[in-house]
Amino acid sequence: LNVAYKKLLEVDKAKNPVIDTLELGRFLYPEFKNHRLNTLCKKFDIELTQHHRAIYDTEATAYLLLKMLKDAAEKGIQYHDELNENMGQSNAYQRSRPYHATLLAVNSTGLKNLFKLVSLSHIHYFYRVPRIPRSQLEKYREGLLIGSACDRGEVFEGMMQKSPEEVEDIASFYDYLEVQPPEVYRHLLELELVRDEKALKEIIANITKLGEKLNKPVVATGNVHYLNDEDKIYRKILISSQGGANPL
Image 1 (cartoon, rainbow, N blue to C red):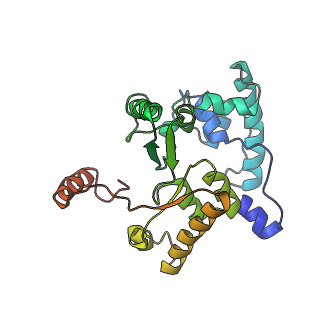
Image 2: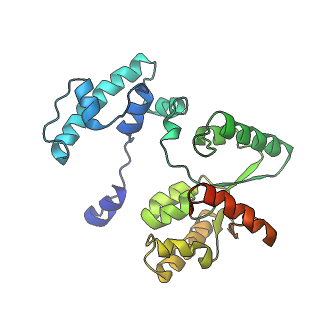
Image 3: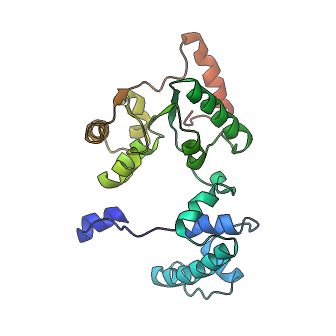
């Protein structure tokens, strides 16, 4: 939306609070089998005419949001920023696509917090893969350096899909930014997620420039998963057991 604002209307990005009604629905009504617009409208007797026509979907969503905000108020949530504080308490994290990040402990406090996050991700937030909500990462951030990781990280994906302003906001969360050799990103060309090698190198260059702008270290990393050649077979077995190519 912000990209369209900038490109087509030449105006600054929207500064008003944004609420995702899908995630809000998952938080408020975890007992529902799905949280599609037509399902919720039918459940709450909200008129939805010509579903998938933008103008009608927008009107129905507005009425649905009013219902959701009323239900949220009954749970003691009065302000929009309180939604973020409570969302991590539901199972919404299971439906979100996780991003990769690098965590480095710089002292004993950081090591303790790292162990805590590993435990939380495997015990309380495991869903197909270990996950950790951002709220928990912020809670136990002391003593840790957080890197932007590989092409599965927020910063790299942001450079592929979002405006420079949005990526700047995303990158501000990290202590350092990571870039890797073009060969490591080769699969993005094969999957046609990046247009060509020139575009790939431009993404890498833009991350470097962003680090300079934000005064954050830019570190060259290799997305390394094993140290010894003989360990390659174990990684291959692990990946094959999960259906082949995956972001491990």
